[in-house]
Length: 265
Image (cartoon, rainbow, N blue to C red; front, side, top):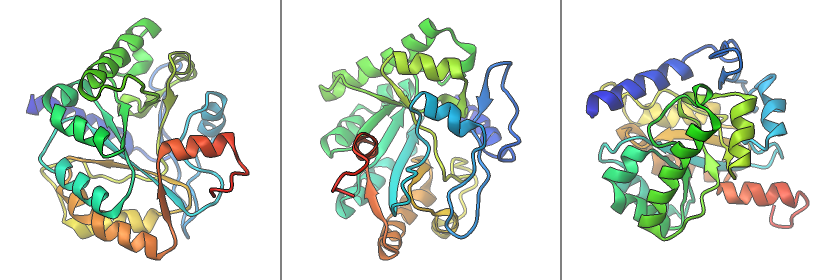
C-alpha cells in the first residue's frame, strides 16, 4: 500500500511541477490544473482555465480582493501528522477542508470523525484516485458516492458538496458531470512541493513557501503527510494574522458568492 501511495505522490508531483499555463491537455478534452504565479502578493494567472471553471461554479480563488485565506488539505494516506494539524487548527480556531480518498476513509475513521466533530469540512477526493477525464460519468459517480457513503457512516452526515479531482485533471465534461452530481470542483491558487515524505526540508521551507506566494483570497493546497506542514502551520497562521489575513471556510466563500454585498465581509 505504501508503494501505491508513493506512486500517487509521484504523479501529483509531476502535475504540480509542470510549468504553469504550459500544461498540455491530458487527452483531447482534458487538462491539468496549472497557473502562473505573480509577485507582490498578487493572485496567479490561470488563463483560459478561469472562464471554464466559472461556467461550472468551480473554485480556485476568492476574487473579491479581501484578505481572506481558505486552507485545504489533501488526505490520501496517513503519515502520523494529521492529528497535530488538527490540534493546531483547534487551538488557533481556524477552519479547513480535508479532501479524503477511499483509502484514507477506510484506514482512518477516527480522524475522519474528529475532523467533522471539530467543525471542518470533509471533501471528496475520489475512492481510488483515478483520472476523472478517463472515466464515464457513471464511473465518476461511483467513485464519489463510495467516499460519500463511507464518510456518512462515520460522521452521520451524508451531505458532501466539494470535490478535488485527483491529479488536478479536469475537463468541461468532468466539471459538468460533477455539478450535475451535486459537487463543486475546488482547485487552488497556492501550492508547493510538500508531499514527498522522503525529502522533507524543515518547517521553515513550508513556512517560506506559503509566505512567498500569499495573496488575498488564496485557496491553499497542503498535504497532511508533510511533517514540515504540521510544524509550520502554527507559526504560519500567526504570521498571516499579523499581516491582516482572516481564515474562512469554503462554505463562507460559497455564501459570499450568493451574497456579494454581505455585511460579514
